[in-house]
Length: 234
Image (cartoon, rainbow, N blue to C red):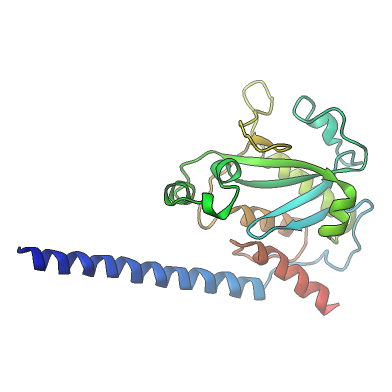
């Protein structure tokens, strides 16, 4: 094969790869949009939030579940003793988010998302973690959305968080090193993939609590849209 034919063949293969990636991306986005418009469940959506409430916190690409530190269902101060600072005030909430440990520790800004980091996460090659961040209750109440469903919602969400955390042979939680101030990363169960993202974990948790959810929720808006639709219908 001469150089010209080799170049043409190579460019054709690259074109096919790009076209296939574009088609897959189109269907991926389309499936996420459709799932968000056609949520399932929601039997507890009509119940008011608990007191104090559990919250859903949304960032650009990620969602967290916020729960009070000194709750009546579980006291996280005791459950996570040795991992959380001792001086946290009573009006503290903990943000819980499951996800890829490299995303949590290395991808702090959009420019940090390199091809190798993205591919290793999507292939499920990295450990997964539960990221736990203490925040002031006033900030949570100002920025995040209270979740309906009463006390039962909180109990289910707490159960899902505990079930997702991984313990060692001695029954202890094991932290993952991170340079991000104020964040705690604990080893978690599961495997990250394009179909099991951080937001999919959140959607699955709130769905088990009886709240409306998208069956396919790879994006932050995939989690919040079903809840917004339920609120609009009331």
